[in-house]
Amino acid sequence: EENRSEEPTEALETIQLFDIPLEDDLQNYIFEQAEERGVDPAIVIAIIKRESNFDILAVGDEGNSLGLMQIQPRWSIDRMKELECDNLLDPYQNVKVGIDILADLMEEEEPLEWVLMAYNGGNAYADRLSGEGRVSEYAKKVIEMSEELERK
Image (tube, rainbow, N blue to C red; front, side):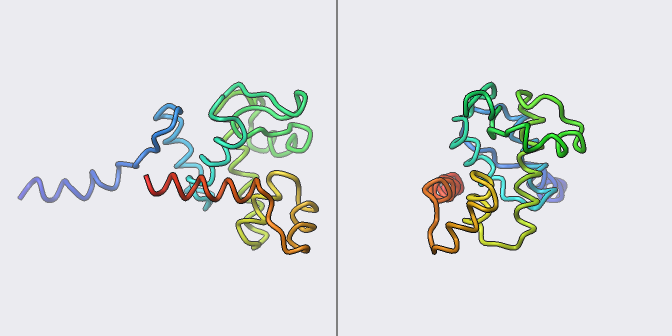
């Protein structure tokens, strides 16, 4: 009898982590933040894979894009202040800002492809490609990767 009543509680607490090179604590944090903001954690992980290949210290775009989710401080400075994040090379702060960006883009009520294109190249870029009936390779790859993650 006792075992039965404990099982559901354990099942609720256990998050199925992805088989990726990120620490369990960080993955749990990503799941929490994503869930809190209504973002699919598999999409977040797929973006991280595509943007930085899980390198927490990744620097791209000639020094303009930082960390796991390759965030550009010049476009995110107000958001960073609001979220009390001042170091995009801190993986926890980086994913917090990145998930916040995604959540805001999702509030535009556009398809996921648009959200990903906007994350990657800005809203005008996403609008232009969508208007032409196109989806960027970036968006296609991120969706493909997220689906792969969920199958494993």
